[in-house]
Amino acid sequence: MTEPAADAVNAFWNEAKRRIHLEEMSVYVGPSPLAAVPPPAWSFGGTPEQADELLDLVLAGTKTATAGALWDYEAEDSPLPEAGQLGIVLDGAGNPRALLATTDVRVVPFDEVDAEHARLEGEGDRTLAHWREVHERFFTEHAAHGRGFSPDMPVVLERFKVVFPQR
Image (tube, rainbow, N blue to C red; front, side, top):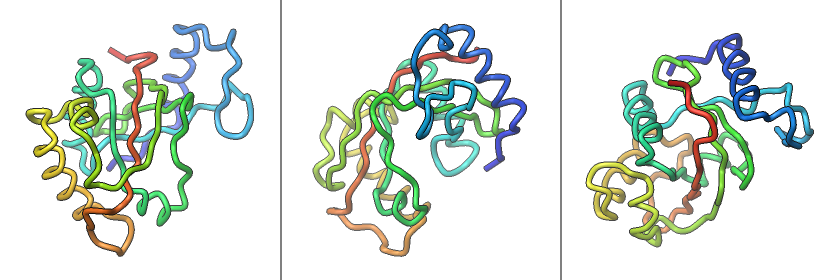
């Protein structure tokens, strides 16, 4: 996927801060309370097309949750998301499009993800059967680790809200 342009991310971050009056709040971005530093910028999915499709669901209010393989976080030495954390979501071309705030995080085995989480992810027909089919394929094709897929693999379930959308 396309890397985000630092200038575009900074401009988006400055606009978001101004629009939501972030300067007046105590916000922690990383280990320090520096609202001057943009939060991490990333995109959904494994391809530019998936990034755009999933972002459209987020902007429409249909997608309010996501999932990632815990093994990928470990393989990439990435910290798990935490409630209250901000993130800038990019489209498939690497343009910043939304500021999200994580509202809840939990880790469960793949085969224990529930229908409510599948519905909140907003994809396809929003059923658990669809979620499992799509995510098993995704976790197999886009794995950053070498463990393969397992029904009991730990999955990081994240809920979020859109704090600032770029229209």
